[in-house]
Image: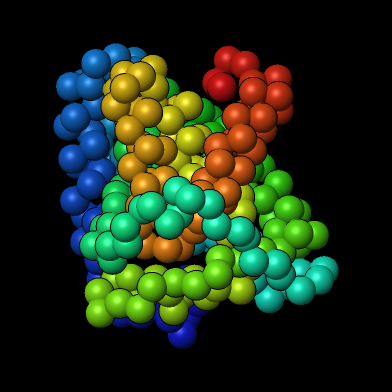
Length: 236
């Protein structure tokens, strides 16, 4: 996400994605099991996904800020038998990154209005702010990350340095958040697959250990049900 690592190839993929996916999501929005009644048009999908892209990039600077700003030296998150049992596979980066960010876009099919979009974004920023407080006061890292020849995983490891932010896993937090948002649109089981697949990808790529995943799930359940649902029950 920094200018030195957010290279031209990633920018190119981003531009192509913004040309294709708004149209794709607009077409499938009425094909899901529980379509949302909305007056949003195709041009709105292009506008909203463009806004979402810049909001994600901008919001994640808070994540990167805590990499180098923390109250004490980071600790190594302990492994469990599940971490040792799970085989490592750099190809899961395509789930860890590409499918993960595609899910951000998929949330657009749940939107009823621009206000609805704004509230969901504020919820996501609230989750990220809470995570940043945890990472600032309890900085933590994983023991190691696999050496790989996979171009995209190497790029991920360069951008997302192992300096902090292992637990709770932000990937898992936002995957669970997406589950809550999409379960009444695409169905319970398909929505549940989102955090399951993202969690497995975290382990397979060694970006996280099992404790990071569990803490991410618990954090989101508590934050969503005790804060977001209380503040705006009509949306959450």
